[in-house]
Amino acid sequence: MDPIENKSLAVAYGLICHSIFLLAGAVMFLTILTGFQYSVGPFQGFMAIAINFLLLIQFPIGHSFFLSKSGMKILEIFAPEKYAKTLRTTIYATIASVQLILLFSFWNFSGVFIWQIGTPANLIMILFNLTSWALLSISSIQAGYEVQTGSLGWTSVYRGKKAVFPDMPTRGMFSVVRQPIYLSFSLVLWTSPEMSLDLFLVALTYSLYCFFGPMLKERRFYKIYGKRFAEYQDAVPYYLPSISRHVGRNKD
Image 1 (cartoon, helix red, strand yellow):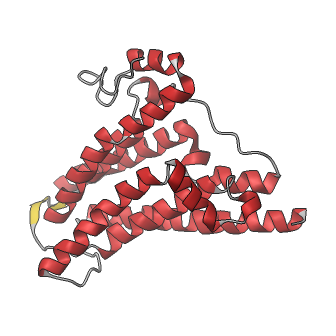
Image 2: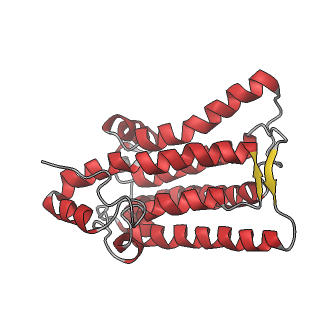
């Protein structure tokens, strides 16, 4: 490809990735605030349970699998061979966004609520939810927004340069806990004024994933950064500042 074709390809991947990313964010925001009551899943009974279960597990399984060597090879199928490795982060973010849209749009709503907070108290819960989204955004930026949003891949192709990943994050929210992104995401799920049984199940399942899933990530970081990451583990708590300092600690 000539330079113009390279740039066109990169922009196309970027537009697709970020459009789906923004749509996923909007769908998640509205669905969480309303407790899944406007999701469009049409099934009831056993079929609803089965489909909801598949929707529930497909994101954490895919989210972890596509970071493995086998998963990365599959991601490369969706790009021209010359740029496959560079575009992996963009494709990864796109697929993750699609997975979230599937979960939060096509869930089969049960109609059962655990709590429904009325006005004006619901405004306080909405404020908590917005704060959680803000913390999620800030921690994602501090971790390297170009990786979190998928822009690293397509912008590298656009510039004709090798993708350079950001360094291990240790500042900002990462100086308070080692996994602020996962903690913030859990808070987003639990701070809805409309807590349906459906949202409760999603929040519980994904909170468990957000606690245990990053342990695999920390193993990768330990292999990459070694002693430096081990010292960071000793200095900064894993998930909650007061009780989780040594969770996930890697030892030689």
